[in-house]
Image 1: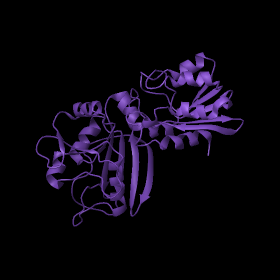
Image 2: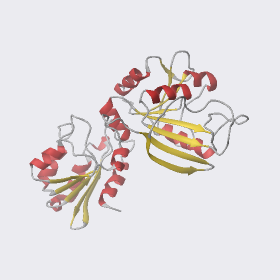
Image 3: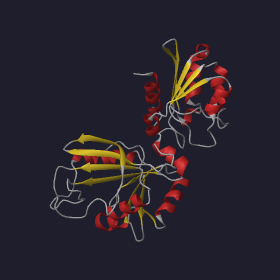
Length: 314
């Protein structure tokens, strides 16, 4: 494992424990040996870099720091990490990605001004690790993932079957819900299925907010009746960083046309339906970073709509 990969792995230890902050991991290396490690958890206050530097102590002088996110450059609950790095005597810093938060950004420039050499990787793994937080910071709305189960001919129903996808795929969906701040459908799905949208049988430590976009009643769900783009901004202001969209083709098509879907998850079942609505309407979309994974009898296609050049997206 590379030193930067170790920093990414350390950052993951904070998942679910960082509140409205990003995941960050840090590794201090001197003479080919790891002499300090750290990761961020909100309750522990100290940032990943400060923890790794404290563990390294005097061995940090002349060493290399690997950190998954640009060291912060502002005074918050702790002093700026950029200054801590400079004061430690670190000679070289390898950074996974820039910080999109304007209040905290600028650490790279501060390090360079102090004579510390900096290598910015712009590493996709680092970008994806904080993809929801980055979108929330940069665009002022949640990171939206559209999940749908489809047949081989792109239908969202299969006559004679309750579920399109298999049991393993359905379990993965509950894991996705447990990892999301909110889950949403449209009113068409509410009227057709009356879904619960909770995370079940996966050891969820918290439940996501459960939403319905549109007008009408929803017994178990919070109804958001305004324009979806405005509702997304309102949800972001309420702290919602990630939203899992499980709506039907109408809502999905609307959000895809508006450029409000950041990630697609298609659970493709080995069956040809031959009837029923397709998973999306008239949408032409370029995709990138496409992967395929076998889940039970299904195939999960994960892809990202090609980002607009003006957006700060992973």
